[in-house]
Length: 444
Image (tube, rainbow, N blue to C red):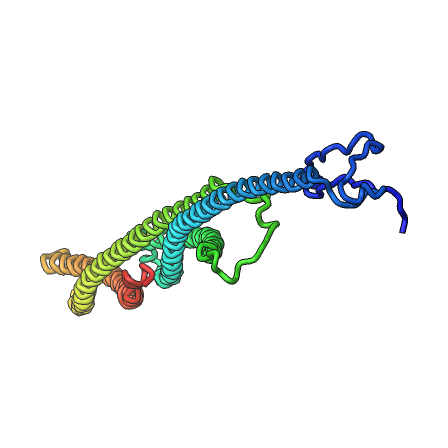
């Protein structure tokens, strides 16, 4: 064991160093040593502390403990205040978030309801337009029947005999009907194209609303699920990156404007559909009335024409009866004239024979006495009468020829009128009974 002199080492407080407290300076002169009691008299220094060091040491410890206690209490107070404020702030923020999520859910529900309402309205409008399109197609098909009837009437009436092949009011009304049907068919075709185009636009607008509604449905489901999260929810996880601000997302104004624009487009299509439906309904009603009015005009013209043909045929038949009667009378008159001429031949022969015999008288007996003069006058009278009868016979035969011509003309014209009446009344008017009804022309 060494008997070297031992000196006391300065005390260092590790907590003071950790807290940045500057330690007390060591004695400047290590050579100046304070002697300890006891064994110092024995000629060496012991390792024990002196009383001042002991007091200084425990006071330092007390002071450090008091400082640490104060700092701990201060930190505890600050921590208590901090976590209470943090808890209150967190609860308030969470409550605000929950409240805002609830308001957002109400807003999404409102717009989703509006979208759903207009989707149903567009669907109903589209179905109505599809039904209207079917009506237009049926109405267009229904016009083929009157068109076929009218063209057939014109074709049949083109086969009328020559004298009756005239451009009468019936033909004019039929031509008007053909032009009316053609214009109505073109109008129905254009209107059908408009309805098809409107159906396409309605479906496009409905598709946009459905996409928007689907997005809002998902957003509502997510926000509703988010709103149901609480601090006790077991399915919450940490997602640090979800709090980062995304550059590509829209703001509330653009979000609302997007839905409003979709609804505005939908309402425009709804208004266009309503106007188009009213227009088509009115158009179908007008075209049906026009066709029925023209059909009535044609039927009336046919009736009037048939009445004229019947009257003309009756007059012709009455006149034919008169002509036939005159022909019979004239034939009898000719026979009578021929008999009268024939009856004059015998007196003429008698008178001529007498004159011949008297011309054989001799000499002075051949004189122009009264018998001679009478016979000569008788011959002249008979010749004059026979010439008159021959002239009358010729006139009677000419009259009979004219009567025969009139009879043939009357019979031909009666046959013509009969054929025309058959075409107009028995073919055309009977065919026109197949004319479509008002409901068929309206597309029902």
